[in-house]
Length: 336
Image (tube, rainbow, N blue to C red):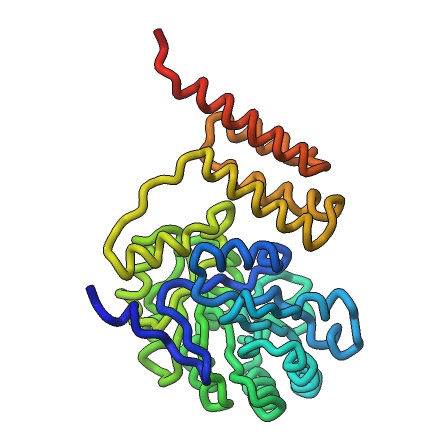
């Protein structure tokens, strides 16, 4: 087995295992989600993206997105914005939360972010993006990293040139999602563009996009030569994917499917964590989407996912898990 996967990647003074990192997914990868993924071996977690202006204007909810705990290390926080002066000030504020580095989002495809000139919109204004990174690098002593896409649309697939400009501005690492903004999350992912970026810059490159299992994880490493991979939607209802990827990369062992009983235990642990951080009322609203992801692939999954929409208390989801187990046991019992 190659020593590549057992040799940590170093970003500044931070050492990151070369397995898989958790992507910074807004409204998904909160503290509870990060805790679960960290428990199952995520090599790095990144907080939900926070608005630079919101942070500069002392918005409490924005500041909450930057909460850092040592249990999550290695950990970064992520900022988005389109004005160098605000981004620099936001970095100085974010540094007070003591993350190990700060990531700049230049890949988010959602309209409310793009419409402000932030996120993936910056791929249409590479000089401004470069000015933002330089301002952030000059503002704090922490490493500044950048997350980008293949391009804004099919006519502007400029990831290679864009990445070179980010490196020139002082970025310490670049994550590449192999889709354009126009694609959003539609297939296909362009693996070749990640390869091209890796060959064009000297800083570490992280490959991102459609990594859903250990095999696709290893393919991303081998086909692109990237230094690390990042998993986002592939971890939905499947936080143990990081454990599976690590085991396959370092030992060559493909994992066996977890028993449904264990999956339900993990789901309840996850929802319990959300409740402990946010209170039961708010937590259960957020838990509905997570529960539906955990139930993917079970017998009568559509029926159970519909029931997730009415979850109000932790007892509700506990009873739902028991019903899922009961129905699935009955379905799998041999018929006389």
